[in-house]
Length: 144
Image (cartoon, rainbow, N blue to C red; front, side, top):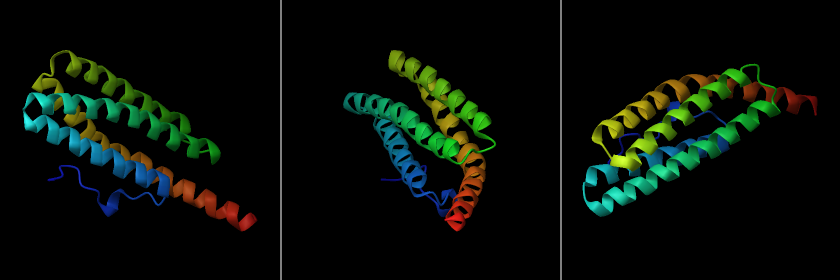
């Protein structure tokens, strides 16, 4: 399968669970795109199922990530959480539109949104948080 969103080392946060979830998300995002490109009716239904899974997985992932933020009393928790809520809202709105008419315009908009999210959110917000979290975890380990 050609991957539009391959997993790359620069996306690694160093937090195993978060990295595995990012990998899983990218895998299903690639499957969604593959199904959309298939163009057949069965592919359309499979694409909608992948989209539903992505919506579910986004919520699961955000909950996991925010749990790490709360655990470490992260100073940017509220801002990061707001970013998550905003993205989840946008994905939900676009997903509803895609379910209604599967328009290429909405699919393209979703693709661009998630592409931007991978570039901006993971590479900025998540990587910055991971440095703070790993520092917190190392200090905690030293304290015994």
